[in-house]
Image (cartoon, rainbow, N blue to C red; front, top):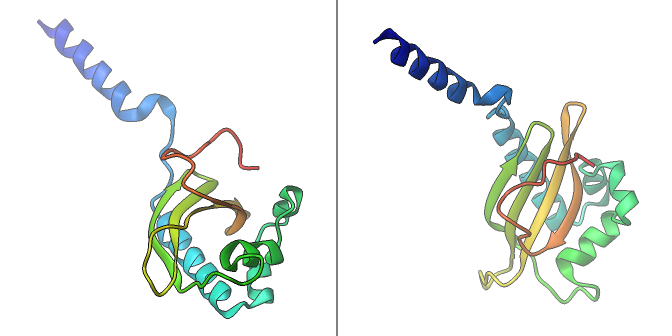
Length: 145
């Protein structure tokens, strides 16, 4: 009668430990939120130096920079308005985060979905890439590049 109990106990212990995978720290959530808010405010102010300080140098390999970010948000001819990021959802791992949101204007229309990927560079979360749409619910954890 002890053998089934021990077997169940060991199986439960293995399930609780998650087979050795460590869950990402929840302490990252407020930091990512703050970084995303800083990005929003720098975009609204069109503050090039503040935007540059929020971006990873790795963005250049994807041909992304401050100018391309502002074109993405406001349109190539400045035809889009921007008030804030709306209805955002954060997906994250130990060293990578993606924030899915909508680019909101004064109409509050949810017709401009966007995704922003951040990487943990040392002790700072920096913007790595941005794209239109919400690519998927889960975050690709294959690399932090």
